[in-house]
Image 1 (tube, rainbow, N blue to C red):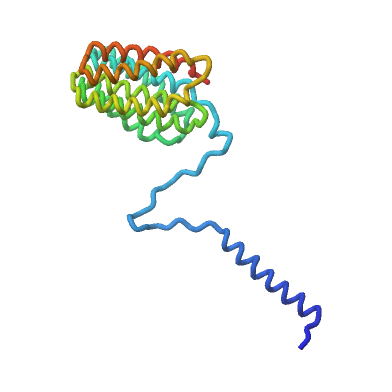
Image 2 (cartoon, one colour; image 1 turned 45 degrees about the vertical axis):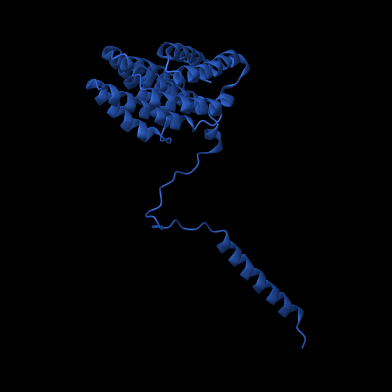
Length: 247
């Protein structure tokens, strides 16, 4: 049995068209299911454009970390006038930061944490204010993760771990201070490479040394020595923050 050239071409065309249609279906994105084994799927935001992924963070986010230091010192010393002064700075900075950062991950959580922090400061609740501040700044660290080439997120995260250690050293709660110091050591080891630049290496080295000495002081339950190393880390991290401010 023989086939004409026309019949063969027609058959090839049909087969090709079939594969083309099948191929289109293969590469069509699947529709997101309404329900899964554990309930409704979490809503995810699309990745931002490439240009936005590598932009520099607003310098006001670094100012926020500085304001957190003012608030924390007020909380730690039960100086509520100072804490309220820091809150006033946050209230001034936050609307501008929201405008500059848009709807980045962490903003919504930061909004909620800031409202709680304001309430706790007004109530002069020491532990609650500390916890709210830590939660607020953890959200700011999440915001910082959107800026891929910036160490902002790490700087804020280290700031938060220092505040954790300092709070429990002040309270002489050595079990928690030791646990938080261990967290600091891990966080610093992870964050250190992102901060290392020629212009700030001296402060990086000082911080690295102070973190190790702080661990020894906390293990020995030596409040004076621990506070000395916290002060050293505090100063160096301030220099590091200012170095990257606006970069």
